[in-house]
Length: 247
Image 1 (cartoon, rainbow, N blue to C red):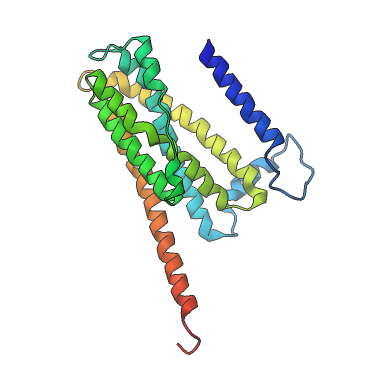
Image 2: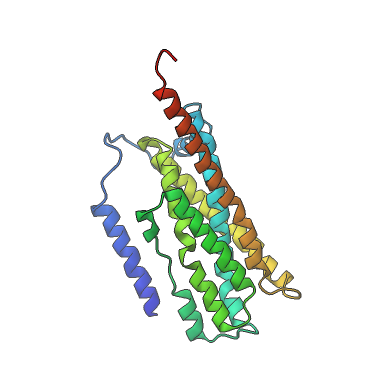
C-alpha cells in the first residue's frame, strides 16, 4: 500500500503548490458561471476563430501529435505487466517493480531548444519500444527501460508550445481541450492496444510495442516540420527587416 500513499502525497503536494504558490495568469478577474455552454464554445473557438490564423494550424498539429504520443504511452503502459509476466521473461513482482520505477529526466533543456528535447524524447521512446518488442531476456528488457528514460519529455514540451500559441484568456479553454484529448487517448489506447496484444500473440508477443514505435514517427515528423518551418519563417522575416529602404 505504500506506493499508493506516496502517489497520494505527491498529488496533495502538487495541489497545495498550485493553490498557494502559482500566480494567476489572468490579471482582470471576470465573473463566470459553472454550468454554461460558453465553456464549450470557448474550446470550439480556440481552433476555429478567425484571429491569429497562422497559429490555428499549429494548434491542430500539436494536438494531433499530443494525441498520438499519449495514446501510445497509455497503450504500451497497460501491456508492460502482461508482457513481463509471460514467457520467456516470466518476471516476478520484484522485477516488475524495478522496471516500472525508472523515470525520465529533462536536463537537456539547459542546452537544447524545447522542440529538439521533444524529438530526442520521441527517439528514446521509439528505440525503447523497439528493444522491448524484441526482448526475450531480462537484461534486454531492462535495456529497453533504460532507453525509455526520456520517453515522456515530449508531452510537457507540447503543452508548453500549445500554451504559447494562445492568449492568457484562452489558457483555460486550451487545457480543457487537452484534458478532453487525454480522455480520448485513454479510450483509444485501451481499445486498440488491448485488442492488438491477444490478436498478435501467435506470431509476435511484442508487436503492439513495435506498432506504437511506428505510430510515434508521425508526431516526430510533425514537431520537426513545424520547427523547420518556424526557423525558415524567422530567417526570412529577419532578411526582410534587414534590407534597406533603397533595396
